[in-house]
Image 1: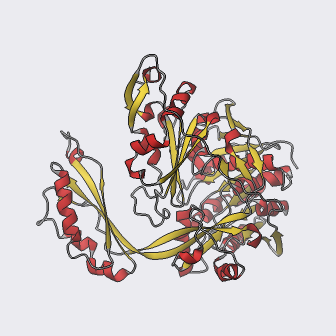
Image 2 (image 1 turned 120 degrees about the vertical axis):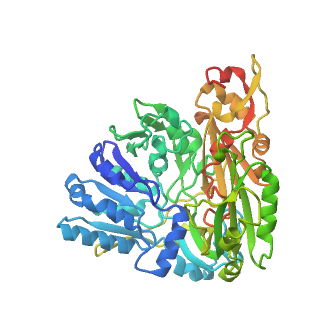
Image 3 (image 1 turned 180 degrees about the vertical axis):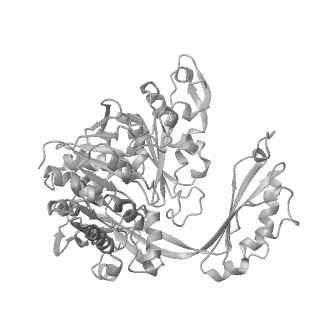
Length: 591
């Protein structure tokens, strides 16, 4: 047990994040633990295909290349590393790291966490009466009608804590929850019990804030123009105290910034409401407070924890077909008529079993200054259950055959080749499984440690917040302006649902924002959600209104047909919408 806060630094928010982040962290301020998050749901789908082709793979090679140059320095400084780069084969990744360390003569102890990969246990679960119900619909997995190719249960952080307690220098995991990468080290460092709910909730919150890397330091932030040195924003650090309160900061020499608004943005990212469920603890976000604690330092307090749910999520993936997609361009004038003719030509002789999704991108300027101001994109996607109808349709050939027999001003990017080869479509089923059915284990050399499920569990449901009565009290009247003039937003995905949080950086705008952003007003601003189930919550401490748009992303990012595949741009789209705003809130904004 340590008295001082543990300093945990992130170096990866997803597979493909900045390669030099480990180099930067090693050159930055002193920390106790480095964490790397690589496994988004859509990433698991891609790794599943790789593991199926070669069972010796399925982990993130990128991680080895990042860490390799620093093994000796990590040991010398006593810095621990925890990452979920193990993907579908954490044991294989651990073996690779041991081999690299041995080759350099560095005595590193490497552990791996396993038990998340439950694909081979699905029949066992069915026999035991576990229905693997869909998280949103409650339908059993048997109703899916798709053969699973991957199934990974979300593990908690106690396996990571146990590995560190046994002296592990590096802990590689498969599908642990993202925040477990932080919760596990904090629990180990402070010697927490499994029922230290508030402390665990605070660590879970800290993990949620830093899990996406530069998201907390100005990346993907509506107010990016107010953040210094955004050319290369640094990666965040969480200082987690013994009571679970935490300070979010960054390496002092790095770019970007940490403010209450950058932290709010990440806090509202990919949540389903004020109740944040995790395998080890349930975090109640509506009591959280953020306070400026100095330059690039934000203190988080007030997190309340309660026992975790009796179930954990299982990410199940299965192949549901094939798709081919290309983008062509249409030039004004008469864009609607031109698109109509193209649609008809694309559908001519469409083979049975092939479906087309045609999406127009952008709007041509009324009086274009350049050719590109007169240009809109047309994304054409062909899908089918099997590859053969797509081969017969030949989307690339169809698009390429229309230059002399279709509309004027039709072209594709001459620097690219139209895609001809169909690729698999992987669908997603977020299932529920009792935590007691999961075999959570830690392997460190010849030692195997079984991690029991939680002794205490409890069902927690999202609160119900009444719709506001729209009242605009303004002594100076209103003026129509973009919502983004007075509000920030952040959106993300959870399976087929998109979430979006909108908050007022200025306290003066909060009462207006909460009154203006009713569910009905959101439907008016976003006509594409008029048929969807929308859930609304308020976060007064954060001056935020939060919505879950159920089904906007179909059944999940890996298979839906939206161009904004995982809903990352929904928040900015909403900020671009115009509505009446009190004039006093617009003073000084230039609107």
